Length: 414
Image 1 (tube, one colour):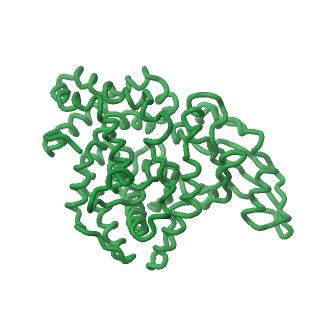
Image 2 (cartoon, rainbow, N blue to C red):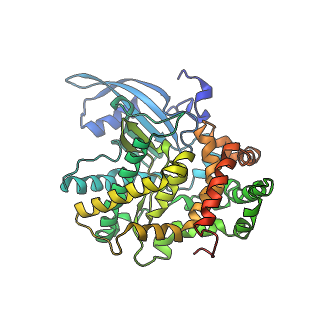
Image 3 (spheres, one colour):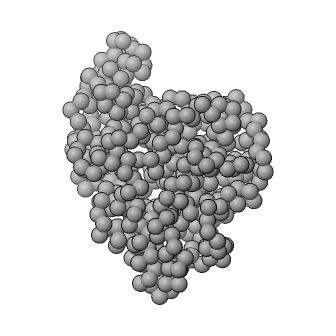
């Protein structure tokens, strides 16, 4: 592969030897049901830019092949596990992310789309899975969405129309999953491996150092110093309180809570756009939980700072409006069905917002700027510097007073 090395993740510069013509030939024969198909060439390149993702290794293959009737070319995306020794490989080695994503592509999302089609709405949540395997290695192949006109948004924030499209798709996903969870919960039995269950994740330095770095930064800034007293009591427990919220459905289910299948990692690099149409990507961390989890995640990982300041309420309103209308369309009703109730559920789970604000947002801000997530996650000095970022501190000048005035700090959270 000939590439500009600085633009791509180091482990995606050279495809492994097993990604060869024979591998693609076997996969396409299985997918297209063409026993005489012959692959003549497979041109490999990195599938994504540095900073787009972390929990996998991805390549693009332009595959030339022939059948008895014609010659064809197909662009494919290959997702596999890291083979290079290092923290990334160790971090993902004993995870269940590929099993989760295979179930999502082959069982869950096709069912969601079918339910909506039966209700009169044509929708695609994601691209097509061409091939998958767990043995002898974990690998998935997808049809490339780029030739279909879809692009990952880089080097700018999403427009309001794009944000509305993304939140609308999430709302429809949540509505259908709420119905299925009530009627066929067995479909989600194996989707129990979320972000907080990744091996060693809750003990990783990037998580455990987030809140201490945040508190240190507050103490060094006169205009923010008064907020130390609210975050200091969280120092040794916020991480576990956040994990408890993620695991709530399976371990501490609450009555009348809006439980859905959460995407689990709903940020701008996990979606592609064609105009205002949005396709979702990366379902390796999908799990059943309160639907506020995805919405709060979107607030900090999808919205820009300006969106959080000026458009957040409008976007959440639009999301819930689509959610409610979709439930009605597919014949499912909620108890205590109201935006007020949903906002109460978000407020009750505000530890998620504290975690996102203090630990995830500084790192994701750096990824928005194209920084290598591996470097950020693995380098303590680099992470500490993120908290001194002027734009981040300026946003806290607005967000922390808003939390104070909304009662976020008044009483212990659940």
